[in-house]
Image 1 (tube, rainbow, N blue to C red):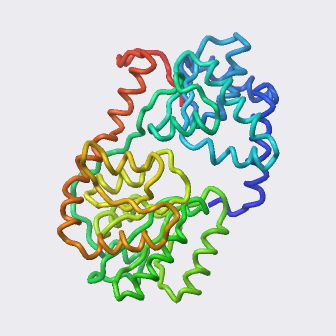
Image 2 (cartoon, rainbow, N blue to C red):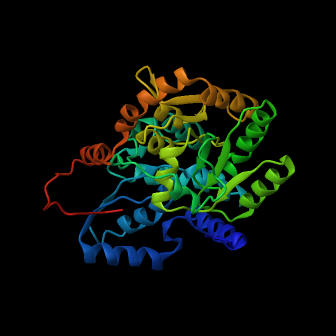
Length: 351
């Protein structure tokens, strides 16, 4: 997936520059959006990423079709890197402030920490931000045979604990920190099997770097790209824990919520919205480590592997914490925020 890294970078930078220039910098795209919304009688537009709201704002300004849009922030700082590379970061932030001001509703931020970050780094008025957590589908409890894993990871064995990373294999995810931590534990005599899997949004360079690091460390890694939902769920079922070692101040943590919904403790950095997933109301469904510190990551991972009493206590909390982040709850909160009826004859909402 997305192997042409230079093309991806060029496209993203071009699109971010277009956003910096304002929505009408691509009038044909704005016109198509208006045409499709008219055809589908869309009254509420929910773009996936806030930066695309420049197109929505331009369409709204034309006053051809009556609609409004809701801004949702869930990763804009990653795209801001492209604007910064082009020397347009302040323009990018200004355009985001414009789209927030142009909407009828306060923008959605996916965690409390992320709302603070949007205020501090992009100048978004915090009075125009409203926190709504994303949602996951809670799994149906069923036993999944271990042999399912061996179709993708043939060298995995049953009698050693599995430590898993599931998520994008891109540089901001800090997976190399997990490799260093695993090597430290190997040198201490702590046994584990390390699984890394997931797709990429920005090319396969980082995946190759991880393979090279593993070779230099003489560390066996069970690595794959994107896996099926069945393999993902089987990994959740048979892993000792899920580690998400991001060097990025994560807005939220869908993987952490998914893992806990399967009853699996997680290990995450002590910064960002991801901590709000793992710790709530005095309960913890996992541990945190000092961000960017592979040594502390190794220490906390060793606790999860060796301290059975701690592990049991954390596992007992996981499903209860994950239930805070259901799709149903998210949907109710969004509709309540919009003031939209739940009735089936409500007009169209497009995302």
